[in-house]
Image (tube, rainbow, N blue to C red; front, side, top):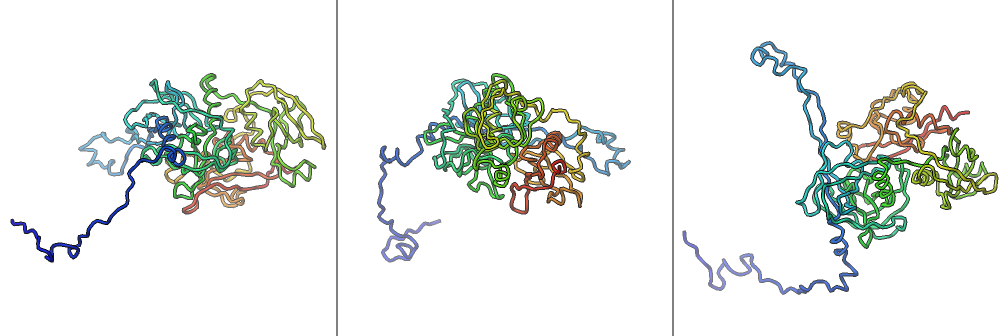
Length: 487
């Protein structure tokens, strides 16, 4: 083989005619950014300080499936050669469901904050540090499904713990960064602002006080860090609103103050004890305000008082408007419930109450909130409640989630079927929906549904559901007359 080199000017193998051009003259400035410019325009120093504190969490859950069977296994000829090796009562097949999430190292000796839904029902939890190499097996020290916070522990010391701050100081418009491992691509940083604070009524958790941000958050970011411009932890990324195509700029994080409160209670007491007033709350609408001659604005409207509770002992009654809780302004019923829940049982509290055109002070001692999932109920089974006649509910398991593409952060009861002509069918409920709330109370068990229906005495019931409709998915509210409220 010979190689002929064209060196003669004008040869068809050389010059621009052959597709080769001379390089253009480029302008270059290869100096690094001056420190004063970098300080004004780059968040790299913040990311470098924070990134080692954010970990990736891998979970494994072992699911028991039905054993394999096929009619030909009953064929005598098959059994002649193979005997009972494939008998019907064989051992169920195991299937491993794997999950991905993020977490935040909050102490040098191995404590990690994450979301409860990241590690819930996991049989194995492994934590990988930001270096991508160091990995530990983790244990769940405690978890609180009502706020979607869990505390993990890994056997390590001298870990890069993040710096916490006071999330109550956050304001709309503050710059924030979200760190986590979206879709398993590796640690990722996104930037945005605080879009809202104190966001609730979403049906994601029982106690909602979310930081809303437009910093992109996606699958795998759950449990990761939301930090301010100084790299201080302000929230634990928890959920997104999506139209089926990933992040659309509406994400939610649990404030670090709430997450820290939960962690401290779990570590010191082993469980969360929440304060309890003993009142039922009504929505404070403009119509209700006019009817009851209430002042316009904020407050929590008492719709009823349970017997034998601190509220009854203190003389609270239906129609009272609670304006302050221990000197703090009450924005609405959700806000009052949140403040009471974060106050230890046995604590004396002072309420400012509007009644009959005047304000008064009421003092009481909080009781401990009963557990709605274990509270006894004389109403009988769920099937005996007329309102839910014709509706079959089931827990959300892994198979249902995959089948209906229900995100992990959606917690409720799956609507297996709805009879045509039933009350809830007329209200718009349909098979495949997920029942999230009744009258603002989260419902994840049939017991919780019974409790919510028993305590609701308003003329109208509000059911918050999650629904996938074609390529879009989200929550909506259905309303129906309340048989117990028609008095």
